[in-house]
Image (tube, rainbow over all chains, first blue to last red; front, side, top):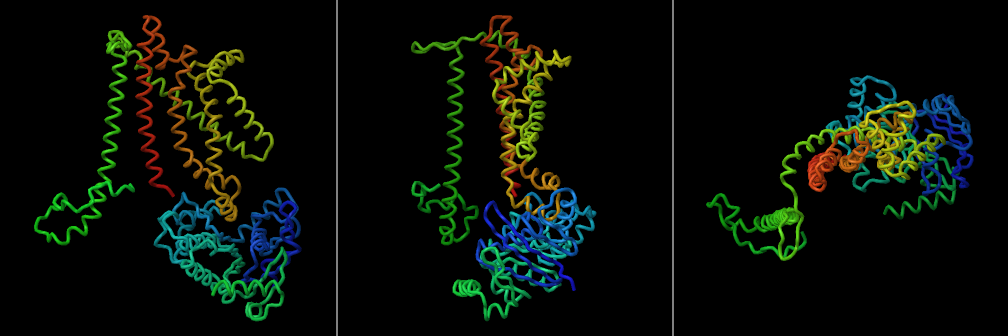
Length: 253
Length: 297
């Protein structure tokens, strides 16, 4: 089966800084892929290139049959980028809920404004997803009344309500108090179980080990290891992976 | 708030809280400690407010005395013709609606221009950026008084005859718009990058992102400073009287003052009216700000 996400020869420069070097990854449908690595390794940039929050310098991105070459400009390119964004949902480290909208309004905003869905249908869909993350009872609250964990769960519901083919998680638990991490990871597990294709940039090794089908290790803008979690965590091949896993092991306990 | 030791600390009177005298007196002191502290704090706040009001009253009395025409210990005060004031206060008061109208129309125009200028300033399209900075630079680099005359004198040459009112509104609007563009720029900048990214990731176009996500938050940020500028504008609107065609408070004061050689009295009446207007508008603004703060999200 053709991969649902295909990243080919991706290069990204920030000014003179070379942050992604010839990165190529295929992700199969329903696969959960965790991307780990030290900060500055390029893992977030890779994720943000997939929905063009960062425009790649070279290479191409293909999501669910829509292929976008980088380095191209113009209307056609913008349309392709837009199509890719409709296929992907993103969850940010800092939640980025819209503070001037209630929880429900946050979740229906995308379907209504972007897809032109009618309000009743969007609301129905939104309520299903809010129920899915266990926060339907908060639908009329404003984000400032929610805990960090609740905000992130709403953010997940907001992304899911766009009915994407692929979900991108950019360090979804890094801004959370330790006791709130679990609730978000549980919701993510549930999303994975429901068959969503997920790319997760994370520092949560436990989550990677338990939920991921595959783990990518990034260092210095390159993928240094790409393996099943069991293999990776029990016998890491690259010394940088070893160091990374060791660091978390000692850090966590 | 920190100076607890200054308060009557001991649990001295449980009676002022006790509505029910049959309650066991033993359980009282535990509660009353906190209650007493709270009461003392409340009392301090009340005292502060009362003393401020009192001081205001005294300052007002002193101000009034300065215009009483009395002489005390060789200190002379200003003598006013109250007969003149009584006769002309009505005529000057009739200018209040005009003053408010000019201010209201001007602030509306200014808000609109300020928003456009701020968006232009953030634009990556060179002509738009240039237009915005050019406008702000030109307007901020010349006096408002001059601008008002300019529109009054220049537009007729172009075959555009505007009433004094509209020439004034255009000048005031353009002027305040240039200054207020900074408010909107700050407002737009206050909306974090993450908000835009979240909108873009949902698939919103730049325009949708601006309209649905960025602007509503920026406007919220900008409302209190706009209120400030509106209050300032009620006073600057006095400058349009210079053209002689807008019969607002200042124009009327100057007119009757000059005609009857009572400039000082007339100006003092005008000053009173401006002061009263700004007090009322400040009060209204306070309410709006409190409401915004309450719904802060």
